[in-house]
Image (cartoon, rainbow, N blue to C red; front, side, top):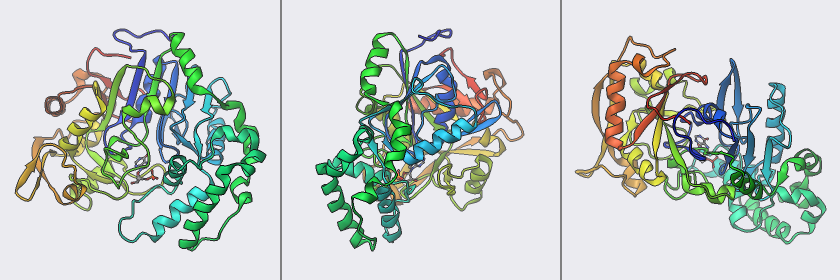
Length: 440
Ligand code: IMP
């Protein structure tokens, strides 16, 4: 097991996004991975875009865990993840070009992880194109259709790459083709056959199979051997299938409750939620504190460079939403928070927090369940003085944080009843301020 730093070190740590994704989890995981032996992705797919800045180099990850840039970290893609084998090979190639080549000791892929195939990508894009109203604004990576086939018991998994001939004859092939062809015809796409499903898999299987195995068993053995494990969430809690802003969500459970089923390992430990010091969302769906198109919204977008890493889409920006965050801290069993991109607020005279929602003469301090209410509810703002003129670029110690920023942080801690353990003030590893004595 890696050496513990001073203070507390849990054998398991879960890091997950508390908003609508893009909270800066990748940077935090890369930083924390220094004291963990294994990093595990347990849901989502290459719809995620985790950006790390290591030694001045920018590394963009999609499906690979953010421990891949650390030579002594084992990285695991769990069964809860959906994997596009072609995109994965490309991502591994990009990493190799940057000097972070992987071998089968450092990367393990669950044989139970379902594959995203070209039929899924085509279906995702065709459905989005067709939807006039109710468009989800997906990343177009085939995530939803792949999870649908998993639940529909007609999906193929990475382990199936061991016998591609067997896939052709498998009962799932017939049911997959029935299902997709019916949908394809109704969406104006050409029908496909077995060859389309299997195309290119033989070449890819040779590259991927050395990494594929029963990772839940491997994880169990590592846990028994005292190894420490960091579970890395993707997307954000508000995109969770069950507890997010359904139907404007992703197709997996993004909350820490998913860790055990998505990895095959149950381990209690510390839950670190990651939230931006303001709010962003990409894609459709309610976001009560949305300020898109206003001066403040544009300033948050520009200062925060809020454009999607996967699709390049502009993110919707607004102030921090306490109603949404209270909901997530409770659902996620959050032990502590990391507040990211605090430096983006440096340029504001005044800062606001959405304290409650208002609709139909009623005030909501708890998240209203009905998405239609969330869509029309208005934010109730609380104003804070900003710290314009005081920059947090280069700040590394709590003592150097502007007093107004500390008041803002203390207010959030009290309102959420959760301790803010880390502040992030930049993309690089070291742009992280440890607020308490908690270190991992
Ligand atoms: P899907 O996951 O591609 O099906 O997209 C469903 C919704 O989740 C859309 O609103 C996407 O914009 C959003 N989404 C998916 N992955 C991410 C992410 O990593 N960051 C932010 N939003 C995401």
